[in-house]
Length: 274
Image (tube, rainbow, N blue to C red; front, side, top):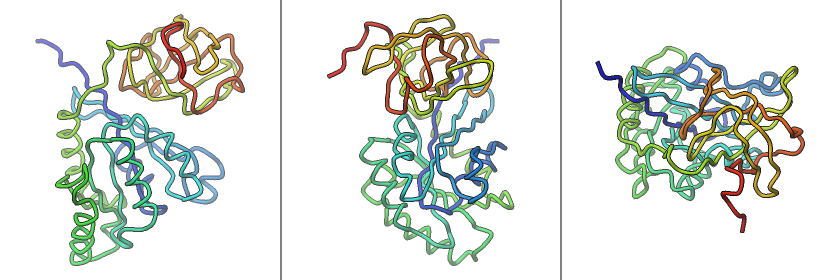
């Protein structure tokens, strides 16, 4: 029996603070994306969070959960860059708010081509209000890439609507354009840190090409070169990562302070900055 190739699709959240983006990702994947002590203490997302899940045997979704607070819009922007499908999250108890609008405009500017409108906190309101917010959301996205997109009402607390959302996500993932693993290696850095016993680690969404263990890579701008000592894809060790996958690289020959969000890891000599 011929194996079906895995489609690697990146799903990003977008929406106002406290509309349930992190709770939604946790309910779908079982993974807590708020990892910072300050995030847990304050109960809000500050930096990007990451999770993943498989839908049957041919679709792997990598989730990028973004903060909704207006002060952290730069962090949201860093996470939205490699997204294939966006979940525009709107709280059914509050409807459209300022960062709903701001995040939506960012998604439009970035040219994201597909998405789902998700009405969260369904358990807090009655059906009449859910339908009112649904109409407001449909009017809000009219004429955009989300015009006519699926609109799913869910509750992360009770689980209502989550199976429907998974079905919708699977259909969108199967219809989405897959990033090319045949192109030149490009990995925008969204985190750089030191891990005890390993050294420098960077993470990002691989947007083109592939990267392997022991491969030499280059940071642009600047041209700093380093070697890939270790590699993880969606949190699991791997020998190779391909376009569309959330990737972590353990690098030698470089300090964490040498790398920062906004740099691009590429094939040595393959790119020139302008």
